[in-house]
Every structure is written in structure tokens, then in C-alpha cells.
Amino acid sequence: MDRKQFLKTCGLACFGGLAAMAVPAGCAPAKTMSSAIDGDNLVIPVSDFGDEATGYRKYIVVSNELLRFPICVFRHSNDEYAAVWMECSHMGAELQVFGDTLQCPAHGSEFSNLGAVRNGPADRALRKFPTAVENGFIKISLKKQ
Image 1 (cartoon, rainbow, N blue to C red):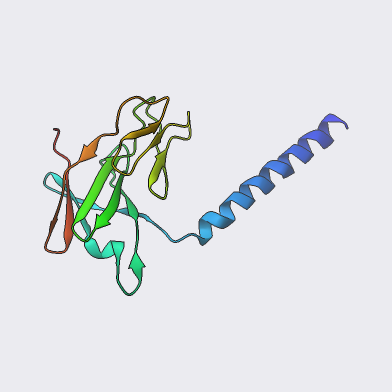
Image 2 (image 1 turned 90 degrees about the vertical axis):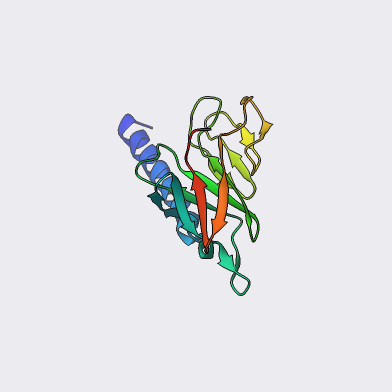
């Protein structure tokens, strides 16, 4: 195979791979949202987690232009939520969410939905944020602890 044919074949293979990855992502329900910061709190409506009729989401990924990384908010019950910073404590890569697990695409570290290390190389838990439910909103405190 000559160089031109090789580059053409590789280019088509890469394009096909990217297209195949985009299809499932486009079909998945959106679980990422932008949220406002009010004072020291990131605020999201409880209703964004769904209801009994439609079913509840396990988590929502929340971002804001002022935040360097998103925050993943896990729903444990009607009034219990856990909010964790989506920056890997090992080398600082942005984490991905898979069900109740946060995973680092760079080196494979895994964290629980409470931010605890499940699998290294990370050896420190994720940063957690206090949450409070008030008047139909989840308030995530961004104050340094």
C-alpha cells in the first residue's frame, strides 16, 4: 500500500470511529446542565432530578462558567444529595460519570458517589461540597472548607 492510500484508509477509519462514538452520545438523555451561582452557593432545582411519575435521575453534572471543573450531584433520597468536584485527585483530569462511579480517563482512578477512592492510582478522596435542600432547590456551598 502506498503512502497516499495508507493515509486515506487511516483517515476514513478515524472518521468512522468518531462518528460511531457520537451516535450513542446523541441518543442518551442529557444529564449535564449549567447553573447559577447565588452568593456562595451553586443552586439547582430539585425538579431537575425528575419525579415519581417520570422517574428519578441518579445524578446531574452541573457547570458554571466561573468554575474550572463541573460538580457532580448524586441523589441518595428526597432530601439527601452528595456533591463532588469532578477533578481527579491524582493528576487533575476531568472525571467522567458512569452510574454511581466517577472515573478518570487519564489513568483509570475510580471514585464512589461520595468521592471516596475505589481504585488508584489516586490516593486522595475528591473534594466534597455541603448541600442543603431549601424551598425546592439544592444549594451547593462553594465556600472553602
